[in-house]
Length: 347
View 1 (cartoon, rainbow, N blue to C red):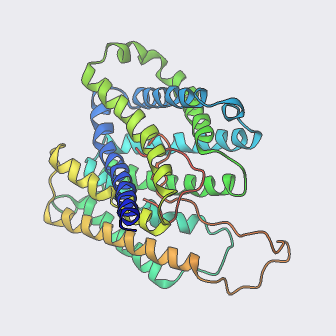
View 2: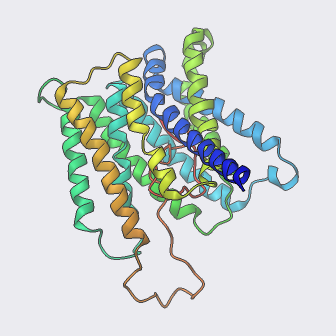
View 3: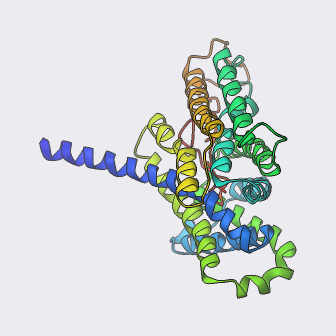
């Protein structure tokens, strides 16, 4: 009896540790992206990140046996458009990271948690409760404080780009749910398609700078490898493994610590400084996103008061909302629910 209990506790701790490690890796990705873009053009960094991720994903697919190596029509149909939207997320996000602090980037992008339910309504039930919009208001106030720095002034370019990235990422996550729910789509195959699409997109615009990539120093290559293999491939696989072994709420709580790690890494390693205003903004952002996440999850779990649609059979289930901080698959995202078949992500 006791050995079984101890084994279960050990499994829970391992799962929690894996989710916290994913959150830490994603939180640190903003500083890595910032460091890489200081040495190389943004589009070249994105090409290298996608190409390395694609090679790793193709290697994993090739290691499978038989039919596991093949792609289905649904995986290709979903992977191509999601690869385009994912690339859009990473373009805006990486340019934003290059023009703001790593701490601000990690905090502002967490707005995806409260923006995704607004975009991914799907007609499932009535309007979200007022408390959700109150939480969104707290997050908006937090963004204003984060942008203020040492005093109120015109918003900085990087902060505005990260705000745009949060909007685009929320749209991407909503599309992930729309394209994958109810279909037999395998995460690894879907992610591989997306990384190949991103590689093809960024190759033409980065081609002239490829000699620069070849000559870059080992430290910059280390950042690129970290972004591709750890923030993308490893984080995705670890997240999938862990979420299958725990509850959606527990996974949401642990992955939701990503912005906290972004601040910690930015301050400890990136030389970022928290003024009283930005410190308050950071606290409000974390509180607002957790509050909004909890309200949306409770709203989604509550019984739908509307009569069932006549167009649905009794055995057809309504779609659940996708993973809101689905790291856009080059490393994507802190969920409100266990992720569906999603992409890799983060910045």
